[in-house]
Length: 96
Image (tube, rainbow, N blue to C red; front, side, top):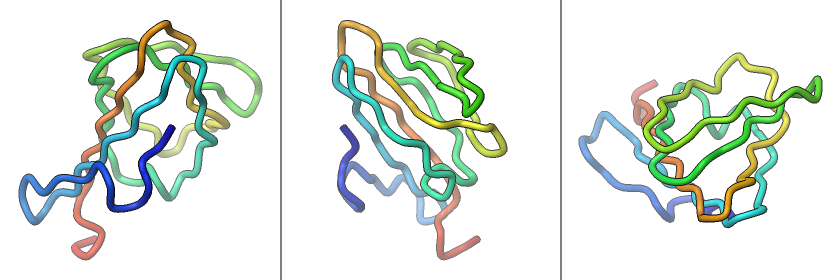
């Protein structure tokens, strides 16, 4: 499950936009590059599977730091037994 636009965002500094995305067990999210552009993504809790457009997958766990831009991603999925929380930090869109 992804939060609606504006929800789950915090202002740490006017330069940064922080977005939180939660995926329930078994949940998935279609990858849209513009949503993750210029973002460093931390796996805050749980595990995440990144499914590539070629069908291959990579798995990451709590504490891992990711960069999605430029990857041939198709889907972001939680195959774990607990919710996965991703926190994405990017430059404020107005300052790009």
